[in-house]
Picture 1 (cartoon, helix red, strand yellow):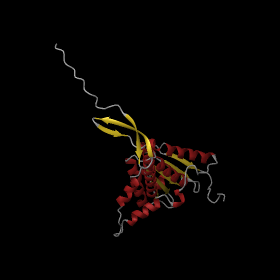
Picture 2 (cartoon, rainbow, N blue to C red; picture 1 turned 90 degrees about the vertical axis):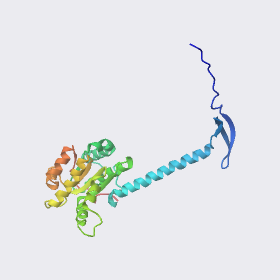
Picture 3 (cartoon, helix red, strand yellow; picture 1 turned 120 degrees about the vertical axis):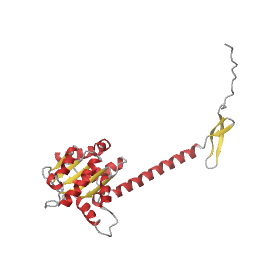
Picture 4 (cartoon, rainbow, N blue to C red; picture 1 turned 135 degrees about the horizontal axis):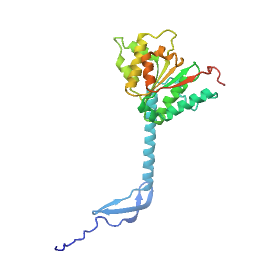
Length: 264
């Protein structure tokens, strides 16, 4: 086999040179010059780079704050509960501490819980902090993840749907239901607040919401002054079955109302 002539090719890049660069803003600085295929590439002023990086980081922070503000505004959490946090919940009794622990874990593990659609039921006496914790979970989830959340009372939902029956309404019933089924988390409050038996309209609406989220495997936090035994009659057996089938976590709030007992 004839030997082949090997031709050595010149290097495409010369060794980098260290020179003194001059920045119009910051004066002289150590500069590296690289020559590749006959073209010079010079490093930029390190102080300009530092400032540009800091400016970009601040832009990202501002954008994140704006996005969070938009999420919080879209969540429709009432002003009274908008600032409520898990850390701000006063837990002194064993039952309160357990409720706070479960709600905190639900918020912390939400990204693991979300794909399963597992729901949380905050049930029991009025004035025990159920809405506080429900709103705090929604806020915590939105602050720490990309998930969206919406808070609504069933009474408000029913009013909004009835309003769509007017010829002047700009929204449809389907749009309202979609706004409740679509978010990553729904906090649905005041289930069974009426002492009367729920109407067919209320039961049908509740089922549309709960079943819609069940089919999409999206978790819901249900809040009610009723206990677990009374909940099926208030929301309908079909709704309750959907919650139970998804492995809902029921948290009892059995202590006395704390309203009006806060110290000044």
